[in-house]
Image (cartoon, rainbow, N blue to C red; front, side, top):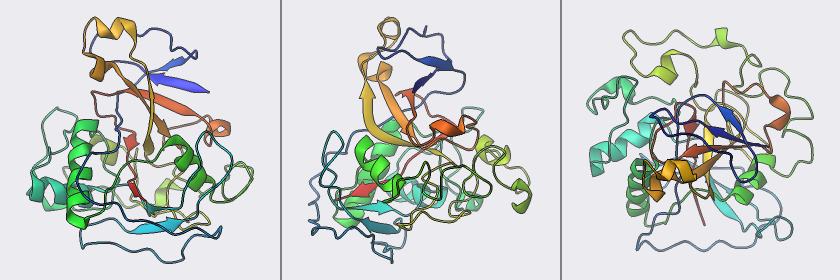
Length: 292
């Protein structure tokens, strides 16, 4: 099933070519792989299991887990690749803001956060980051490590989300309790109160929780289902009515996968795509980088 997050700035929604249901809320983005001169790291053939250990290529870099490839099935074969163990956190993203002058995320009042605020160095997934800003993070991460980082394709995302299982979810056929940060399907009382004067809307509202708060999937990846929705490289053609108000790049629709903390249609979590406009940051959409 396909959904679209509706525009908030006057652009008129029109039916998606596949047929969509319009959902209220913010708009977001996606991103193709950043074009850098950094050299990709070749990976050997997988044996069907993920490496038990994760590694980080620098102190500020996300820990990466090597997952096996999928030689058949899907629109494109999935090769072995390294996947971030968790969604990009505020701590990780703010390192790029400070070191590479990447744009600071904006909060609900439209003002950028203060990069000097030590309270932002936490493990909440960073959201409300437009694609152009996250491109800067990927560029910084690629230059920092010498390895070209990118976002996953739809096929890659579903492959590591399922983690070799055949059930509806990596943990079984029902959503259950305390398996993922999804609406009423987890115990919110286990999380401490927010810091005083917290200004990040998705954080103070409980829309996102610290990464790795729930058990990992069989390949050692956290929050692939739930918490923040995750952007992939799946895109859709611009909406014609949007083009009357915005440029083609801004009107491009991009896909987010994996549900989010506020998602309630639990039967669709492994297959649904929420499409977002590419020129806004969305409170529920985050990112998980990968590299070959």
